[in-house]
Length: 431
Image (cartoon, rainbow, N blue to C red; front, side, top):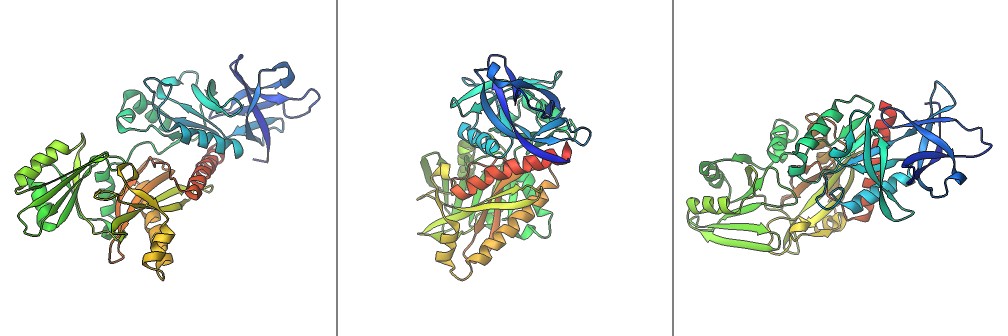
């Protein structure tokens, strides 16, 4: 690309058309295009269109072939699921923040659902947030350069419409890149990491839970085990079993939203029945319980956000600390956990070793990201749960390809910028 500049892109609701502002006596480029297939975009004289308001400021790149041709990049589509009483589902505040970050950094983003794709004409009827009117507007867009998959549940992602869209976009070619195509499966990620000499020592003992005998085998090896759904999210469906000191009783705990259910049973048969009663609809794994380090007598672990940056390389966006609520069996905030500052927590516990521990967390997270990336299609981000035990040993518990919004302001801002920067990297390198 020989040079770049910025232009303002407008949307005219009555004409249902996008255009670029044209000055009466301007000698600027006369032809512009955008999207995966370089769809043409009109250049019009704004005063003739009084209802129009500037919607975005976006980069335009002059092509080598002609100085009179400009290519607007990047155009980013956020793929969501169709709602029952709304055009789309998902975290709308997150979408608005992303669209706003793109507006400030020279990118156009819109939200769409799989049923809104016109494959024949390579167009999508999606929604963008118009900050001028503080509301969502529907508009017709060309296929984007980059698609960010934010379908928020496994059930929605497994629908025929979603699966067809993911498959067809993945096969579309280098002009269009879809990243983070699917949720991770806990069992699959552990099998991948277990085969790595570098990373296997960071994994708790884990096995598939299919029969009562599988449960017996794990209880013979570990004082505490966790039963985790392979398709779970945000701690939902996790169960815990602790062998009590006399080794004849088992303490079973289920965490259902704001309700904790704990009971003591005397046999594996009764444990198995409780598991069947309180499990969610998903295959399960059984995992060794780790005695985590504590703060104020409550266990904590780390949420690590890892993303691709403007050069397409993995980097740690930030590390947050999540502390379990009283009597809770996980540290997830939706299940009663709370947020603490990682530096403050580590400085309080290990004042002379906090920087080294954080550096080791970064190193582990980046190594895990690279291993997982080699076995999935295209990844742009993931979050991880990493624990620290009382011997200062790190443990990997889980990776999530659809990270929830981090509440720490610094991590949040950097995460939004990274998503736009990575999309620019994909666009400039593939267009």
